[in-house]
Image (cartoon, rainbow, N blue to C red; front, side, top):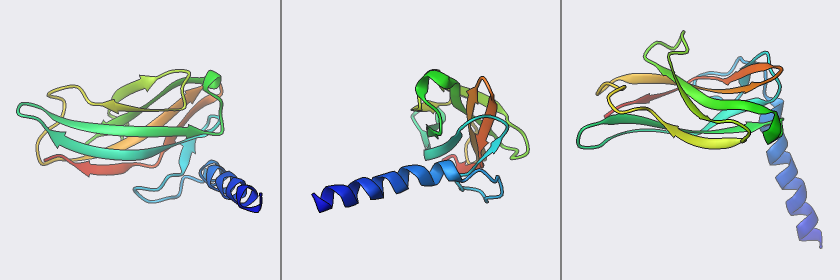
Length: 136
């Protein structure tokens, strides 16, 4: 019984920490969110790869502080310029997490891309801090 209670408390703490970070002052790779909407969004996995003909970026995102019915859209933006949103990859609506991948031929070889997750609800849009990835 004690182990179950301790495990539940640790789980609750881990689940609450990402939702508390919303100051927008983190550096690249931080999980805090910025924007003027409800909830927060973070990048949980980011990678770049190459097939025989295409170069791609794959990004997994996780929303917190909202329920799935409140989510109009989640996804990510990617760009070679960290000051802009760049191209958008829509992952879905009415869901709290997912993984998306860039379209074929939209990424250049040996290039650093800045990726920012977004969460759009009826109260606005929040963004993760950017992370970067270099394509092969």
